[in-house]
Image (cartoon, rainbow, N blue to C red):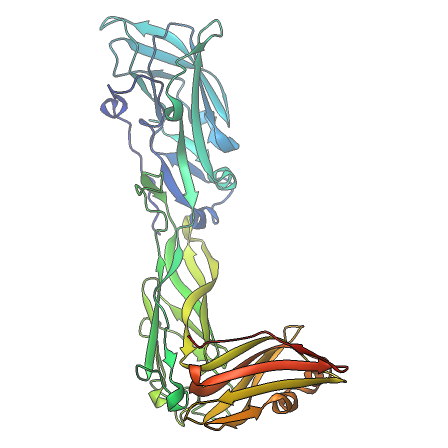
Length: 453
């Protein structure tokens, strides 16, 4: 398990910054990244021992002055706070003693100022968590991290060491997801209607590559405040589902309970499986890191018309967290690209069906190529389907309303409120669709957009 609990004493040299003239907790303290995945498996008693918390004062302090440190999230185990701390880095040596504390705050009082080396307390630096300080992992998780803030006052209650701005507050623990799914290469095949939609314009193959970045938090990056990795989960493998329309895949073993593509149709070289196929999904198991999905329709015989549409993936990321405890997170709807069509495709926004309603839908083909016609539909309840209605001859016009009505399931014929997609295997700009409907003697036009550019 990849857990790094790093104990780094905050050396005096690290705490001293001559350019600073204001109270500072940001410079001497480290921001440590703890992954959400690791924390999701932490037991209620687990302590995160912070590798370095410190503060620097930038004013003249005297015995009796008060330093207030607050910690968000009520995660601090205040029993691990030092009872007294001796400073370094300034001419005067300052000793502070713990006055009071709880899970969200610590109050220190100046108990001694030794001026043997000089009178000034400016740049006096304190290593608070050289012990180190412990924080409850569950509380850190619930609060999304821990933030330290600094304030000070004189023994008589007057504000002290008030400048410093943003340096008077800092993140001690930064939390976030350790894993992020990314797509480095997308499906982008263009289905060639001049080859009966059986190949792409560039051949018979298309591919996509997805990756899981095991360190979504890049410590030290411009958008990331953390400086060290503190506790991380150990990645194992991922269960991947790739969803798309795979209805074009020929079952090489008819009658078997699952879809069995011919050898070479799908290649997943970085996924050890087991891999199963269906008309709507590929399910497999892959390692973390780049994983390829290669599709070659050349061995899918007999050749089938390929559908235009999108690919998306779901990733169940399996890991070990605290104490080797197994867990997983799920990343859904990762876009993997799409297949588009170089043929004609028109989308009809609304077309009603039912008693007393007639559909007036005409498809014109001004080109020299005859092409088959496919209709895809979705109704008002989310049901959907597709079917073929023959072909449109070159240089002709065809009324396709009756064929569409006849091809629908009975429920949609009797009362469907449908959106239609009409696909013709002819060049996109050779065809044109006109869509209307007649209800009770009143005719209305439906909006129809096509892909002619």
